[in-house]
Amino acid sequence: NDDFAKFHAKQSIGLVLFLIAVFVAWAVIAYIIALIPYMAVISVALFSLVIAFWLYGVLLLISGILRALRSETDPLPIFGRWAARLPL
Image (cartoon, rainbow, N blue to C red; front, side, top):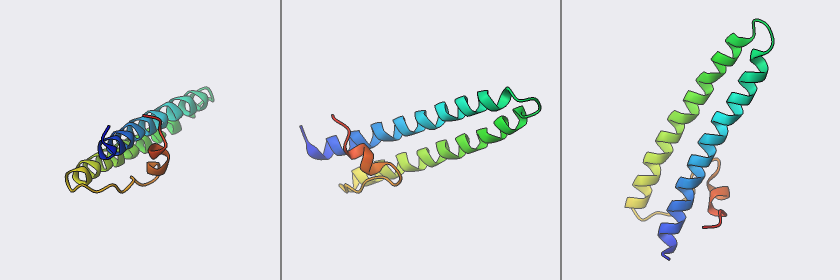
């Protein structure tokens, strides 16, 4: 029932949902692009964006851990305000 713990739990759940959404979006777009002849290379190249977002997610995870250790409650960039509204 601690508000501080709930805040950081929502932020980490939001981060995981964001990374899953990035991967699913890439899978759908890559599947559609791969149906076009000679475009499979582009779908593979788009995977570099997925890797970049996952690396960004790891940096945000480390940032969240450090913020929790310092007792800070700043929302994470990009999706932090959305994650704060998650029902938990």
